[in-house]
Structures are given as structure tokens and as C-alpha cells.
Image (cartoon, rainbow, N blue to C red; front, side, top):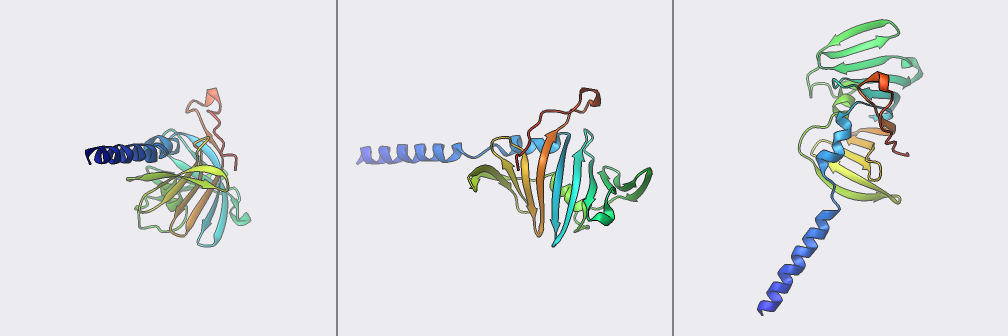
Length: 185
């Protein structure tokens, strides 16, 4: 009888060890979101589609230069520690501080989605044969290419951000672009 119990405990221990081996370290995978980067984003915000070039600098400022819709082409929104500013050519208009959670649409919300906070759980998923790390908490789901660790998709409520051409940047502009970890999507 004791042999069966010992065998069962060993079998369960081995099973638990192998089941945890595939889950990524959430902090390690999310760390690329806190480095300076540039990427292209397509944002589906309640059935309105926006296309933009997004970047994060070394100070944590996130900016979106809109490409679509055509009416907003060339307009840049800069979300920084001092609040939101709208930039068009040489004109910068400070909009002011934005309270987290009070704005439910637009670039301030997108910025919060690109700067994940909180406790996350992770698992591995195959999406059409492509292995992805899925990291989620109670407000958002982040998907990363398992091979490159580049973010490819963020979902929060009815807002979806699809990320392509993700590239890390050095914070020293004289050294040029950083490591290229393009998502391949």
C-alpha cells in the first residue's frame, strides 16, 4: 500500500513540474513594454479603427502619431508624466493631466494598455501554429510571440491593439536603433 502512495505522490510531483515548465515568467516577458521602443499599431476602439506609429522613450512617455483616419494624419498625441499633449507640426497644445480610469476611450486608455500594471498570470497558447505567451490580469490580455518575445496583441474590454514591427530602441540616439525583435506579423 505504501508503494502505491509513494508512486502516486512521485507521479503527481513530476506532472506538476512539467505542467509549470511551459509557463513564462510574466515579469521577464512584460519587461520589453517598459524599454524604449517603436512599433506600428492598429487600434480597434469600439469599432473605430486607428492606425498609428507608437513609441516609448526612456522617461516612459508614450506617443502616438496617427496615420488613419486620414483626417488625423500627422497628429501626434504624447502621453507623459505631466499629462497629455497634442502635437501637429510645430504646434504643441498641452491638454493637461488625465485621471486614470476616468477616460474610457482614446489615446490615454491606449497608453495605459501599453504600460501594463498589476498582477498577471501566464500560459502558452498556439495560435494558428504560432506559439504565443498569453499574459493576463483582470483588466487586460497581452499576447507575445514566444520566439521573439515581441508583443503582438493587447485586449482590454472592447479595445484591441494589434502591434507590428516592434523594435527596441537604445536610449542614446547616437547609437541608433536597438535590438530588433520584430514580431513577424
